[in-house]
Length: 295
Image 1 (spheres, rainbow, N blue to C red):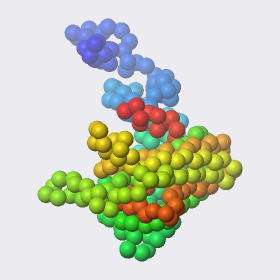
Image 2 (cartoon, helix red, strand yellow; image 1 turned 180 degrees about the vertical axis):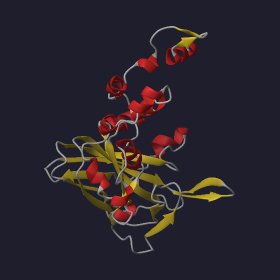
Image 3 (cartoon, rainbow, N blue to C red; image 1 turned 45 degrees about the vertical axis):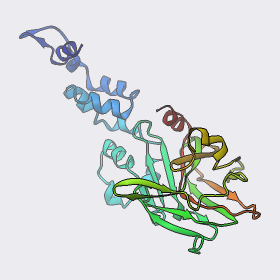
């Protein structure tokens, strides 16, 4: 098949013409086909011939891949970063994380779907007792996209709150907390976990909540540690990063910007809890999360 495709591309076989090939397709027709393909597929086909390469650089093709409010994302950057760029280059620029709010939040465009995703650092949230080093510590790490996580040693009132107001494009979004039971570090080049402070998460569930400025609400409860359930096969909730789904919300229009409030709480003061790392919150399109789960 590779040989056949090569012949179609060149339009020549053994020095003789074999008729029209892929190189004879008008660039405008190729561009119309590219409207239905993903950005990675377009970039792969651009290597076939000049017509495909030209269509793969068309502004009309790449504008169809950009989110409807991509200008809102560009506004987070200095104008000199995107002035005079083609739509293809703008897509490439936005597919890399854009930091804002003092580097505590990031937004980017998914390279396959062109959908808007966001992450919010623990430093961008309100954490009860975060300034008291008897309870919390900031740990630098390469395991976080923000290079730092909040580590809880022990506390009775556990509460983490956050809010984001942003013009998300229309769609259904999922909000998740990224958490890790135990303190991790590297020793002699190997990753090791310490569960010395990990306790209290199997006694009462943590309550996750979200609400939006247009009245949507969602919540769920779950125990973050289930040693009796997991001990038979090893405690799967300890020593690894887990994304806890809080719920979903719907955006019908990016104007006006929607405000989303979210939290996780365990405020039963009859027992203490500790030994957990709080990294970030993710807000991603619902269909993108389903695709990630299948991988």
